[in-house]
Image (tube, rainbow, N blue to C red; front, side, top):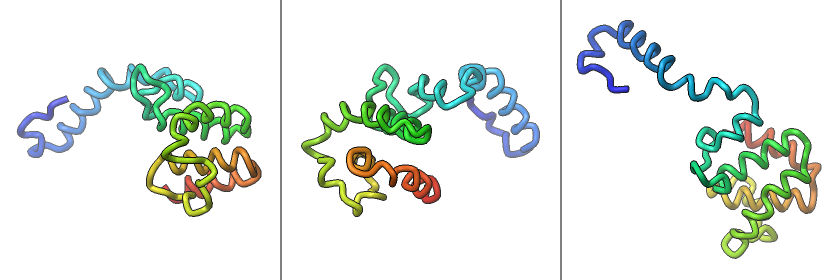
Length: 134
């Protein structure tokens, strides 16, 4: 939506117009998303690339959802293909503790995959840490 040039002269009116526009145009396309599963089924809202639900961010997000449900087998399965493709540049075996908060997503993915393989008891505390430091 394009704001009118004079939107600053009446902020309450501009806010009302923006809300009405959002209700008409933006919200209908996401109103069906009521839980994590439906959110994951809509890659463009999870950070995936439309038409490419195997993008690293989408894979990571879905794997984190599986972990939060305690389904570590599913999380490992979800991540195994992506990590196989990334293994030369981001080897899971190299993702030691120093990669726990790495700014590069693929290193955090490798770190999570390593925990899925060697110590699943550390995953839920890791998710709490990651959530707390966002």
